Amino acid sequence: MNADNQVPAPLADDQVRLVVEVFRMLADPTRVQLLWALSACELSVNELAERVGKPAPSVSQHLAKLRMARLV
Image (cartoon, rainbow, N blue to C red; front, side, top):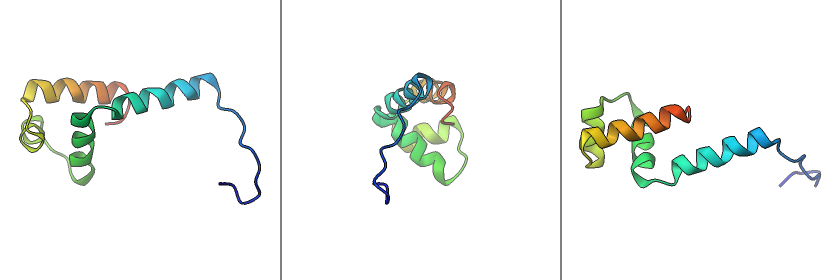
């Protein structure tokens, strides 16, 4: 991985927790679809719901989780 073959320093506990939380958020197919849709442009909850084929209240809950994880 590193050109000079040095072993990277261990991650601090808070960094590990952050990485785990991000992966947890990305482990849900709906949230991945929402992030993908939002990577192109800003969309309303109703537009997102239509794109991912989920009810607006469900999309809103997923967005809240993504916001708490600072991914949106």
